[in-house]
Length: 241
Image 1: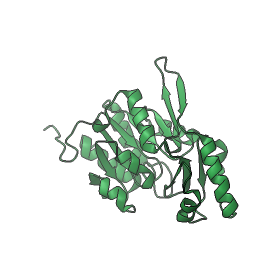
Image 2: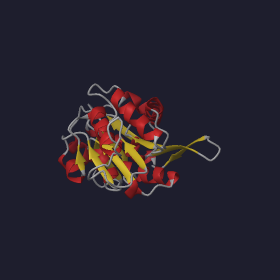
Image 3: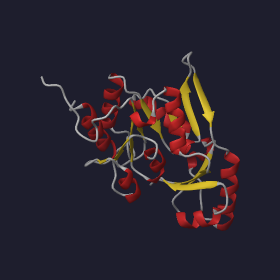
Image 4: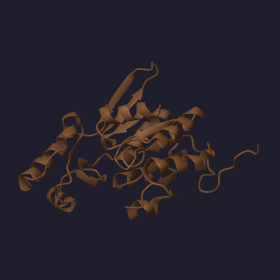
């Protein structure tokens, strides 16, 4: 059998893969994708760790990472928190964002937009605020203008968080823990909060066409979406299963 040789843009060293969860490792109804799980297991089997990076709370992101078999650090709450195992294989969590900054911004938003509601999972959120899509994101941005926060849309919620962090800065910390240079990392995502990850990684794959800014930073746009698109990207990198 002839050796598989990946074609551009996948013909470059990849020592780790960063994957978003919702819209990337999931089906359209937000269930974990079996094809994405297969792709993660293929990567891990050849020594390429998968870093799960999400806007989800850490309990959800950690569980999703374990369910698909990802062994890399877990980045949650848009870079606000990073979970990893130390040299004794014990779990450690670093909180990189100041929750108080996000809470102050939320209080301003809620006072002006009483219809705004926090996600039910916010009871476990430790570094940011996530609100339901019952309000206009541009209205939220105008209300918090001048505060030290970022406001991003994931396609599932509106997130308000400490402007000093992003999903990209959380990924950089995860890669530092792995001792892998960012230019040898493939990032796979689908929405606005993946832009900062695409800005730091060497190979970027979009599994959705809904955000033109993400498409502009992608080296490859998958034909399929969600978990099927992630499977497609991994097959381009490693060859057919």
